Image 1 (cartoon, rainbow, N blue to C red):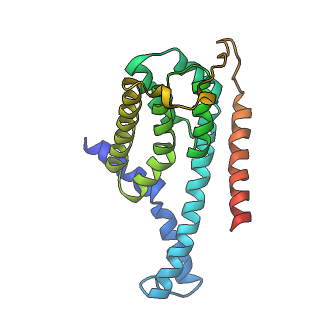
Image 2 (image 1 turned 180 degrees about the horizontal axis):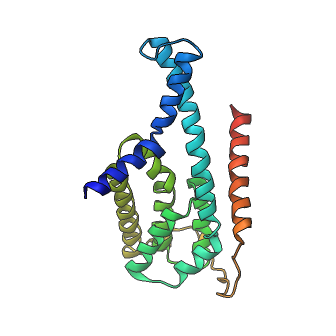
Length: 222
């Protein structure tokens, strides 16, 4: 048990808090700028440089990782997986897929409409809709870096429970009738023989394109 705790502590310090980066920036500030990090000015310069590089590295890794995972779960494949299940099992799967598929709240709404039109139960799609923007890898990593892994895991569990309960309640109360007709107008779900495969090189290219695209947009807006 102590070894596991030590491993998590090492991962938290090296990968999330990046203590090595903090030490490197401290050396740079003190030896290049001639400022002591113990002073207000030196501490502020250290904090700014350290946080800029830390956030840049974390975001790059997170965006690349999430985009790589997303390449395995396009909306069509997610819809087919959910279409095979019913009941509470479908709600749990919807919540889990919402967690591992990195769709934001903006993209989750069109996905929800598409899933509902494909004939998936509204309750199941709501479980997906709740968990997708609420729980994702980015929020887990950021919470773990700011607090610890226990807080991050509790957040994940609570998010999944809320998604399953919310979707199950909607199914139990039969609230499909309150959804606009244009949303519930069913369309045919594609067959299982549809090909969603990508090569490893295509996945890496797709993930890198997402990183460069997001950072280019952020750079233009800043």
